[in-house]
Length: 191
Image 1 (tube, rainbow, N blue to C red):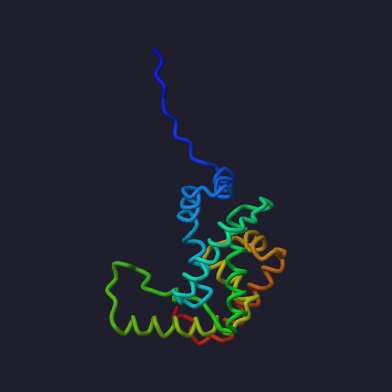
Image 2 (cartoon, rainbow, N blue to C red):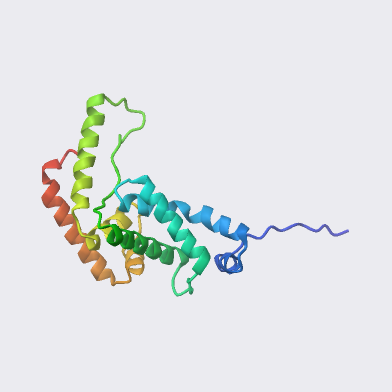
């Protein structure tokens, strides 16, 4: 006698997106859960750690995805999602004419190490200086730095998100590094 095995099939990205277009709430929930961190992380870093703005952008991005679903499949879904998120952040900045930066990246290097109050204060001071330096950068230089060092994207992935060449990404990162080095040179050896 043959035994029938139940096979649970994980939906492909295209299947999931197709179901979202049809209004399937379960597919929308799955898409949201799988990608929420990516959108929130970019927005949080883009707006200098301001959680309320990051939450607003995250909500705007997913609302747009679920109501207008304009993904055509010309690129990877995550590339399109990053592009949509960056554009939403830039649009919000233009709308409100605010300055923005990047969240606190610094903490202790060894989680087992005991940290003194002085170390914590120094870490926060360094973080504030780095954040202020990144705040002062134009989005053309700020965004590639966020995508590279916070999201860990490759040059090609950044180029896809920003819809520019790898050479442009390389140039913007190089110029961004030089700007930060000029403003933060006094911190060498501290970080």
